[in-house]
Length: 110
Image 1 (cartoon, rainbow, N blue to C red):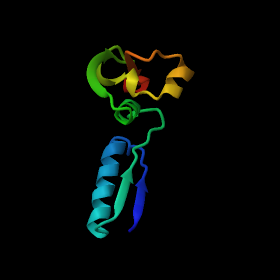
Image 2: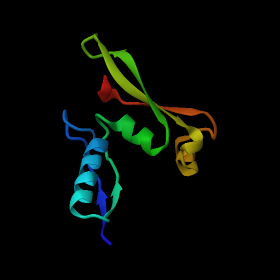
Image 3: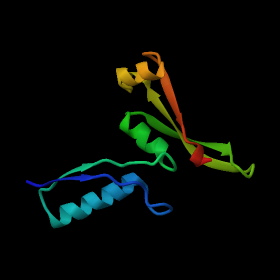
Image 4: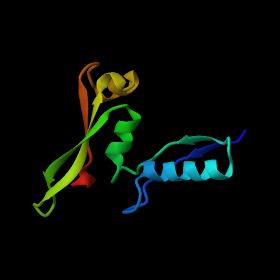
């Protein structure tokens, strides 16, 4: 059995990292039935950071309107992650409590 790791960043202005992984997974399955695929969308910290981090931590994304750099409304996402989903070592290193919700904001979205 063949096992493949897919680790894509976004294709700017075309596909999100998750969409690229999904397309590649489907393409691999069509040419190599039975292949085991591990898809791991990545981010460089810019566009898409919230969706990838929040998705990996089992949180949820919400879309809101914010004031962009030209003082016009811009739709962007922010994430909410239950602190119980954050590994204890990470909570400790960041000085986070054990309970509550962590907000994840991406400046590139605005």
